[in-house]
Length: 510
Image 1 (cartoon, rainbow, N blue to C red):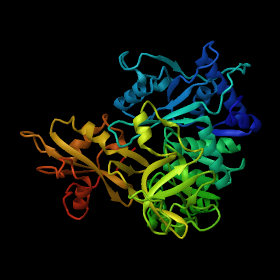
Image 2: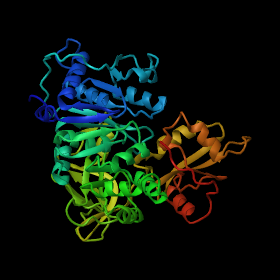
Image 3: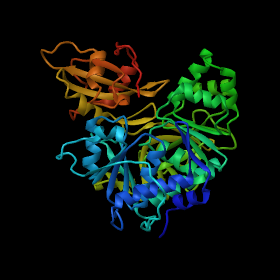
């Protein structure tokens, strides 16, 4: 036991610039001071938080990192909340995690004002630390639980994914080795910070390595492209939808496209993940910038599992080979281990990167493992040594714009609409978003017709923007199987092969 490796490494980086945001630069030493100040306030005289769950709400940036590191250094379990979450979603995270305290920035404190029956814990406003003061903080065993991230699964409510400090360190080390992070790297951060893509792949890997992170409150394409044109970055990570937007902007000739293309072309690594990257986008990006995007595959429960190589062929439509310290196998529907090429099987993974379990969901945890192998629910084949994702075992998971959504969670919300008697939510393929959210509904008797525009308007404030349906289908009845369950796979096949969807395409937002 002792100091966490991430903290001790930050100490060794000292006066190097860790973060640039809003025109300000913050050193590693300043981040350590700020996180120690947060830890001291959280402890409030106690010796150790002893794995108390501490929820926090902050955009990616210096305050976010100071809070997260402060929770870890005080011995707590960090519960990052989405800044785009609805009150209902925030309430679920607070109730489910049993958080005893919420940390927010002053400007977002009102967002977390819930009645005592929902959250009766303490509240803390983050404040920039004053002069540095020596503080005695607890020693942290790497086997301790470190973080709970909420991910939508096949149940109607998001599950809390519990990772230990050792698990997080293993995820970081695997990527640092595979992608050859160094202290000379510089990367923008605009992805959500309640998601492993932003937390682990960017922030933790960069700060472990002594690199510089430049954070943005959101994906501000104008500001980011200007920084790219300035040659500000060596590494760039985004989801496929962002690369689509960047391609559209470059092809439109906005700003100084030559300088932007050169800026992208000079980077040593560009990564795409969180959703399938269409081969057409991979090729367009190569033609525009000369860069071959590195596609990888991972999950909240495991961090990154498989990656195309840093050196070697980055194959369009494939996610590559297993990362260091990660064991991967494919298992067929009949329970046999797949050994041949181009034979489909469920991706199963084991190793130090795998999460500890779902918070207070022992049955869900047990069901997610095959012995000591975690069942991803994704089906893949191996082609010439490269894994290619074929789809999912469950039709209740929708991957849209880099987010992993639960169809059942969305259905539960939409059933509150007075005009909807029954509904089913499915994902349908889309070249830009990977999949889009489609709702198939049966209307209540006597209700007025329901349009997509009306449904989307009603959904705002009840669902996060990226969960709001993109298309709507009205049916007289829902197709069901002999057991009375909605036949989702057959419904999806029917929709994809017909013109049943008459509403215009509405892309996800947020």
